[in-house]
Image (tube, rainbow, N blue to C red; front, side, top):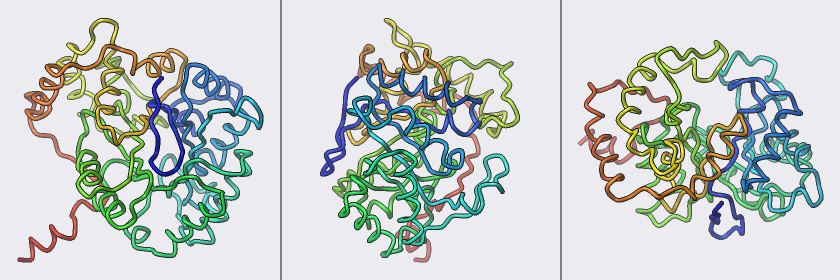
Length: 349
């Protein structure tokens, strides 16, 4: 396992992390506490140190699992605790229907209270990375909210802070303007080889403006498509996260994957190649694949040790993506703000 640091924070993360939502929410299979804790510890044994939770995952369960898996003491050495706050699950957690959002509360006092509660559940005095969970433009523009994050850092309760973008793909303006105006340590967003927009543009923005911002990447395998194991007969349970994907995502995705099989060579899996492609950007601190069994832990943790992608392979990948793999254009649906202020100005003129 290789490691990357979030500049100016002293936080060093494994290049491959563990998104705790897969074992705490029931949206990607159901796990008992014992099963979840076992997977978390197995991940640590093979070199994964970053564990990314959220207070709303399982109404506090993901953070409690981290506190149980890595209790105070030697077992916690080197572990990086990351979590997110912003959803008012205390008052609305029982109203949750599937994966629909519940009300958010980003008032500074609510964020402070949520952070302190998260620390208690994880059994830590300081969280390594705190993220505002699925912010909107209102939160990007809220000076008092960002002052709250800085105060939490000054008080030693947070080492690094930033934002997580979602739900679903999109949120261009929220990501770009957060980087421009707030220069957060971390932005977490959906980005993968098959779904490059707007993730690629958001990351390029950080480079263009010289921001210190680094990135955590979620959904790096396009909800498992880039692991290369789905077939036309694959069916997802009704409560499964993947069941919300349109059927065309599966049928077209399978055609794309077949054209990417050339990446499977010398022991390198397609899933490892997808992670390597993301890590080619040095602003990516860690990739957070969906992990739900030991085989995946080993496969993904060894991605950095697999045969590197060659320039020829990268060029062919770019060619395939640019041509949409020879398939007809696909309609994209975004939930966030996809127009930047300067683009609005251009339209008006």
